[in-house]
Image (cartoon, rainbow, N blue to C red; front, side, top):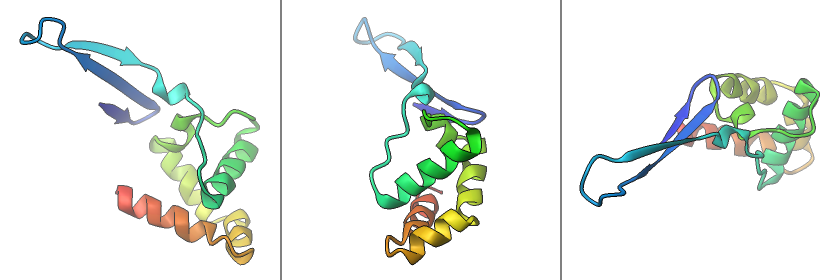
Length: 102
């Protein structure tokens, strides 16, 4: 289960008895690195890193309430325009990903 909000929470469920109530195991998955897989995601990652002044962009920097604002800011930024102009169409890729996740 994922719980995006102010950060990115998650839990795993385990059934140690097989039939009884599940055991809830919380985790800190939001601390994991945001693993960019396309030119659009790398442009977004670079934008967020620059705005936050960090090298390590966490998953919760992107997948959270504040992350939605960061994605919006990226789409409205010159970085997105530059990436699109350079032929990567980064802004369109990120916008499509956001729309499909909504």
